[in-house]
Image 1 (cartoon, rainbow, N blue to C red):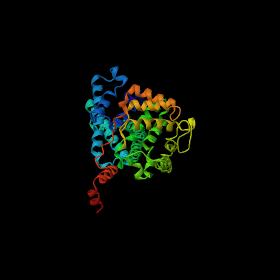
Image 2: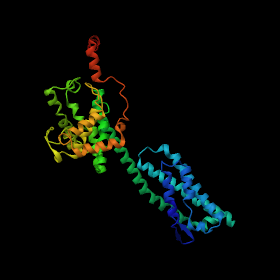
Image 3: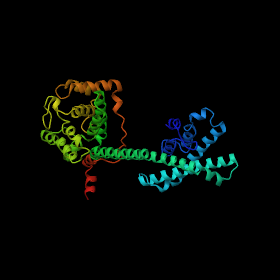
Image 4: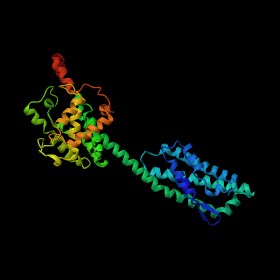
Length: 391
């Protein structure tokens, strides 16, 4: 970018060549990805070569001086930036703007000051005389420098806005993950269930060619699909055996609870139809609304497949995991009735390519405390300990 700017100079009155190379050089000062000051000095050295330098105008020593001028000016800007960094709070737009002005001022003073010094040495005239004779050209140069700084301001503001968006997005996803793990505080056996369902659902959606924006919503719904279980009684949620008919009926209300929890949030509202319908069967025999086929949101049809596969390849409080082969056997057996056949095929294709272990790895930290379910089981085995806790 700097080379392109240098290749397009504007010839001003008095023999001054003006370019906008200052903007990308100063922008490099604020780039956290560059190993400054080396990075910005390298940009200033290599990026400011102009076509006239290759033609020998000015002479080689003039080109050497110009490159050194740029490097020293860039280093001066970096010194100001490094000196003021501790005084500017992270995310403070006015502080960043003040740094831009200060760094740009240091750059302009060094850049033009060295030019005056070189001219004085070359002509034998005192600095004051060179300054007086060159004041108009220096003014034009300073205007050029500050115009470049002003040109850079929108770029930095855009970068600041994007950084804030990224931080807000990370905060949002962190909150969603915290919500998805809330149920883990009760039952360690479901640890990471929502995380794995989310990743499996996202992989299926990509295999189907779903738009990335919709994939993001499906993955978020995967993280939150069981959030409604917070409203289910602990005796049902943590029962170490299969549920009876009445208990199953109460458990079946968790999609409704989940949708009610998400509905008030504008950011999470698009997930409501997916969470509400993630137990609807393809033939209409599911719950809570009895939807069938295409009536069921695509995200929900994907989630029920991902949820079933994850459940059958993970241990539960009342059983060991049946495993990958058994899970795929059941999914294929019930496709067309419980599951959308296209989605089962997409999962099968994805697993053939990536392997059954592709979704086993999780970034979630291990549980290092005794869950409520574990505590209840221990107290049931140890009456004396239970009485001690009660007292």
